[in-house]
Length: 158
Image 1 (tube, rainbow, N blue to C red):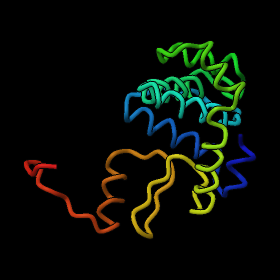
Image 2 (image 1 turned 90 degrees about the vertical axis):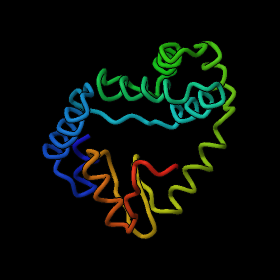
Image 3 (image 1 turned 45 degrees about the vertical axis):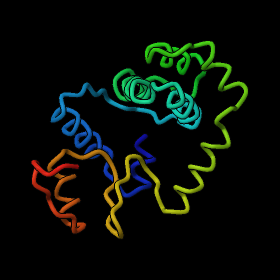
Image 4 (image 1 turned 90 degrees about the horizontal axis):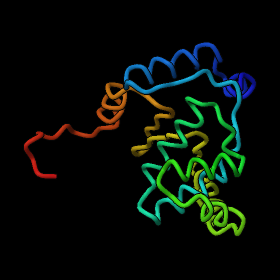
């Protein structure tokens, strides 16, 4: 994990502290990450979960597995458990993975992200302005304002 952060020009200790502060400011549990695992298969299941109306629940369980429990989301048994906790059929999840039902869709998404220069999630982009990583609400609001978006009256219809 430290090598990945260092290669991106980040200080691992500062990065971990920043993540912990951001999580605490949102009341989100967050553990000490020591490893980064390949998320492609979890992304495939995320696309499947979306077709079942369970994308948000699945994503929340992936977040918990990675950032709280430090689980290896590249492993099928871990993904099956995550699917179950999100209210999805774990056996169907395994079938989706084995058959590669969403494999090409994910590769297309990743190719598009690479073409656009996106290297991390989340990445927010408005015109030429880009903000990478999880940030507190105040930082996101400042980013949106810096990008030239006008704050609207909360009484205006959306």
